[in-house]
Structure formats: C-alpha cells, structure tokens
Length: 510
Image (cartoon, rainbow, N blue to C red; front, top):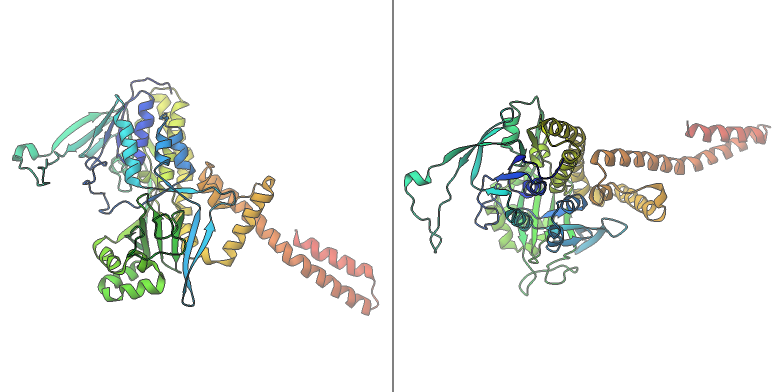
C-alpha cells in the first residue's frame, strides 16, 4: 500500500496494541484518530479497566519485532532501556525446613525475555503518537455504535471534571457536564479495545462471526513485593536493592495453584496469585486461614511481601477471572478489523498476550502494504490477514492454557525437564537437527504460532521414537539371546536365533 494516501483510520483503544496500530497507520500518511474510553492513560489518576495496577508484562521477540518495524527510530531503544532482562524462572520451594531456590534458564543460547511496565510502555507509545501531526488523540470517548457497512461510528463524549489545586472536583454546571454524542466517518476502523470489545460487538451485526468465550476455574489477585530494606526479608539470590533475583520470573508452584513475581524498574516485584475459585472463596470467607494457606503453599512468599501487607492487599485488591476468546473472521470487508484481546484474549500463562497483539499489528500492515491502497485492495488485505492470523491466534490461545500446567506443575516434572534438556542439547550441540524447545520458538522467534505447534509435535514424535528404540533395542537383543539359548538347547542353529533377532528388531520400525 502506497504511503501518503488519504485513508481515514479510527483506532478504538489506546492501550499498547492500539497505540502501536495508530503509529503504523500514521507512518503511512493516514489520517488517524484514536478513541479511548478512559482518560489519558499517561495520567496516574486514570483508573485501569480491571481496577488494579496493571500486571507487569513479559516483552519478547514478537513484540520487540513489531516495534522494530514501527518506523520510529528511537522508540524501541527507549522502550528496551526501561525493561529488565529475565533469563529464566526461579522456582521457590522448601526442602525439610530450608527454603530453596532453583534457577531454570529459558534458553540454552542465553536469550531472555524482558519485564516491562505496561503503563510506562503505553506512555512511550502515546508520547510518540502525540508528536505526529496526522494523529488525533481523543480520551474519554465511549464507542456507542459502529456501522462497518456505512463506515460510521458514534461516540459518547464524556467531559472530564476539572480539579482544583488540592485535588477537589471543581463545580460544573449541569449542561457542561452532560455527555455529548458525536458521529465520525471512517475508511477503516481498528478494534483494539480489549476482551470485551465494543468494535467486535458491533462488527458481529454485519459479520457471520464464530465466537467462543470461556473462563477457567482460576481467579487471580495482585500483590507487591517492596524493594529490599533493613526491615524486609530477602532471599539468597537478592541483589542490587531487589528482595530476590531481579533477572528471573519467580514461581512458587503447586499442583493446582501458583504465586508468581515479576521485577519492576523501581526494584519492587509485581506478584500474582493464581488459585482455584474455591480456594479464593474459602479465603474470603475465612480470612484467618489466609496466612497458613500461603505458608503451606508458597513458602517464603509471605515474608517477602510482608505478612500484614499480604493480608491487606488480598482484602483490598480485586479477585478477577481469566477469560479466553476465539473468534473468526477478524475482519469485515475493507472497513473493519479487530486486533489483540478483541480478537484473541488469552490466559496470561505464556506471556504472549501483548506480544501476540503487537505482532497482529505488524502482520496486518504487511498485508496492507502488499495490496493497492483502494477499497478493493484493502478488502483483499484484510481477508489475507484473517486467513493467516486466525489459526495462529487459536494456537497461541491453546498453548497459553496448556502452559499453566507447565508453570505450576511441569517445572517440577522429571519427564518435562528431561525433554527440555534433550531438546536444548540437540539445539546447542547439533543445530543442524533443527531442534528447539517450544518455549524458545514461541518467545525468541517470529515463527508462526501454528507452525510452532506443528514443529514441536513432530519433534515430540521423533523424541518418543528415539526413546522407544533406546528401550526396546536392548530388550530385543536380550530376547534374541534367550531365543538362541533355547534353540541351541533344542539342537537348533545359530542361524535360527539370528533370524529371530532380526525379525524382532524389524517389527519395531514397522
């Protein structure tokens, strides 16, 4: 698609995915208008949609690559300077009466993911947008309707209440505070407005969209580990003012629950408890059992947060569900497309939610760039985008759900750890085999998610076959030897024993 055309693009949602999508569109010379339900997301007083501080996010190659192609030379360098490398998982446990830490590296080649503060990332992207003359940022605008056939959208414009110097709300007359509705024309609307997307809702009135929404029986609650000080606890891996290792994603695993911690640049950790809804309900009902529950399941974590703080944060922070969404198609004609959580909300256990959304942006604009900049070309580009992206979105959705087992149980599974070591050995010592772990393919490459799943399944079959041969060949030899002894004792011949061995081994490969 040629740069400098007059396409009018509406981006609904000013989170990281929406902001990057607006940046891509603006770099192509489009007239871009970004509409956000909330106030300016760079304002600390703006309440997040889930009424919590946002969970720290894991930024990996897919998200990095999307920003690399944004057309903003300094953006990626600035973003990466605000991140913390995480080289692996730190598994916390207890052996007898001693607290333990075990590091499990992510990648045999030393590659790492990065902890990034969602609010800081959002700020950097919005600052970049604000400097562009063809971008208009519209906060406090609620999408109330969208007609992708007529290319019109309607917004309820909420007037922000002004504040006095001491933070008190200034009085406004009734007329000036009343919401106003506006109508906006567009050529293309990009729905980047999250799991409960209004764009998707209105687009479904014109699209025969298959839609699947599900919740898992797990709730989550956020906590904070403060920076290390003389009055706080720390683990043996603590350094540089952090209460525990700053270069790991920390996991306290259990069979059906876990507690995780991700480092922040202010030397604190953003932590999340994931537990069955029955456990959360019981803790809400019987708060006296909260600390014993934590000490039994997540040894050492309560002391890092602070026991009083742990109880307070559990009481005050919301206990939220985890939603998973699949839908198809992701577009309508030449005028509408959904990206990020609006198209494929997923559970957070692979750290790919934001990365997949940012990758959506790159893939979408690659298709737009490869087609003519007219209605017909845009329609073909959006169709091609859906054809490519739907199977990838469904795959990472499934992988994210499956990775919950790996995080809370697999990290202690001998079979899982054995396969990981074998694949890493082959990747490191015999790179020509093409072997790599699923995690490294997802987090450190731009290989399509659907291709990752197919490749890893093929690797699994090869490894299983190899392990089977390793076990059965000695058994076949042993059986052949005993057959030879039997034939000899029965006045048989050595040739008969050899034939038996050949037949036994041959059957293993048919």
